[in-house]
Structure formats: structure tokens, C-alpha cells
Length: 396
Image (cartoon, rainbow, N blue to C red):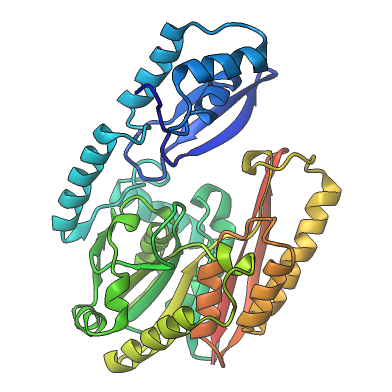
């Protein structure tokens, strides 16, 4: 504890009554409640890298703020972080190991966000979806739908876009939905496949038993990793909508995607053998599965502004410029051009943090040869930060 090390977490600034605060949330889902801290505490936490002693931090605090912080106050901060399992130490490692072992034993992934981001009550959720979709007639579409691109932002902000693509799933009578989501925490590999069933307040989405056995006999077996799915929302938010919209029974194959940072930075090239092998293995597995399927992605686009670490003001001009770049991206998606899509993001070094980069890239690779219509686009903005997202339908 003399050289405390903070573990991976999310920290975002916000203002209240003219003062700046920071909110700490845990993408692992181990710390259930978020923590609110002041700027000076954020500075102290930033020094907790496992190399600085508390005495070192005390000295740096004096230099930064011009006043002394007592050792007992530093120890209280460390103790608070430790109690919330935010320090990378033996206590955290032991607790994490136990959680992972318990989660591996379960056959069903329980809903993580029910009661938080959407209702945990079955009838309330059905009534909500009924109210959202009540004005939409059955879409008139003559083509065979093979894929959907949807947001993964919360329903309250993204439902208008969700609605504009999920209504097309009423036309889909295919027994398998391959869902590409985004892992919002670091993962060891570029994809993490789950073979668990997923529960929602509406029912249980079953993972295909047939596909499970096929996957275990391919290189995809190396990418089976259940833990990243435990608290991730990008796939979970698709499931109640799928259950409401699909008129036939279906199975799922949940796949979370990791970062393409090394490809953006040019450390690894595109095309890349590992990604090529993954795409080929998924295509081969689906061919061996032998039944109709669709590829669905739960993705957002740009994340810009104060909440995401940008220091420039997010005014009408910067929002307009970001929208123009989004339209370039959407144009590449509409042409089902994975290479062009990736290169557009790479050219700007992903400075707008395209959250769905890997998932969209894989979806475009897997749906090569199909056609695509962009059905909706939205740029959410709260005065300081912005998230953009879109909906698309892929068809033959």
C-alpha cells in the first residue's frame, strides 16, 4: 500500500455549480456504484502508478497545489479506493479470480443493465416497446435482409435510431443472429466469443448448441472468453429489442470486439492475417451451421468533447465538422467497403474515437457483396460532449 497502483477504470469530468468534479465508473462491473471525486483527488489518483510512494505523491501535490496534504488524508484516500476494489493489488486480484470462476460456472449470462438502463419488469418493457413501435407499420422491403447496424447508446438517447432499423427485423425469419458488440474495456484478443445463453427481462436468448460445437473445432476456440461479456452493454441492449421485433424463434452468437489501435497507428498492417483468419473461420463456421443467419452490430460512432478528454470547445462548427466526417464513414458503410471505412478512420488517427470501429469493420468484411441503406443518423449533444450513431440495413 506504500506504492498504490490504480487499476483500469473510467473517469469523466463534469461541472456542478461552477466547480469541476470527476466521476469514476468501473467497466469491469466490480464496483457497483460510481464514485464522485474532486480535481485534487483526481490528481492524487493519477500519481498512483505503482511506482510513486505516498511521500512522493505528497511532494508532487505540494508542487501542484501549493499546499500540504497530510499523510493521514492520503491514507484515507487509499483506504477508500481499496474498499471499492479500485487498487490493483492482491485483494483485488483474489476477488476478481473468485468472480471469474463463479461466472464461468454459470450457463446463463444474467442481464446486467436491467433496472439501470431499462426496466427489469417484463410487462413494463413490453409496454415501452409497444409505445415506441406503435406508429410503425410493417416495412415494405422486397430484398433479403442479411444484416443490421444499430446503436449501443442507451435507449433514452438512441431509440429513434434503434426504431428505424429494428422495425425491419419483423421481416426476418432466420434462426441465427450473430451479434458483434464493442468491448468498452481492454481485452487480450481482438474478439471475445461467448457461448452462454443470455437472459433478459423478456426471456432467454439461447446460444446455438450446434454452432458451439462447430466453433470449438476451429481457430475460433482460441477466442472464447466469457468474462468481457459479463457487464458489457453493447450486446445486451440489442437483445430485448431482438426479442420484441423478431417474429420467429432465433438463436444468438455474441461476439465482442476489441481495439484496433495498433492498426490505426500503423504498428500492424491492414489487411492482417489474424483478422483474415478470423473472418474466414466465422464464414466457414456459419457455412457448416447450414441455416440462414443475419449479422447484427451494436455500435456507436464519434465520441467527442469534454467528457471524452477533448480540450477544444464543442461548438456548432466542430459539431458540423464531425458530422461531415461521419457522413464519409457512413458513405463507405453504405458501399459495404471495409477497407475504405477503415482508412477514413485511420486518416484522422481515430481522434474522434469511433466506438464501433472493429465491429463495423468485421461486419463489412462478413457481409462483403451485400448492399446497404443507411436508415437513420443522430448526433447527441449535451452542450459539452457529443456521441453520434446511425442505423443501417444490409440486404442482397
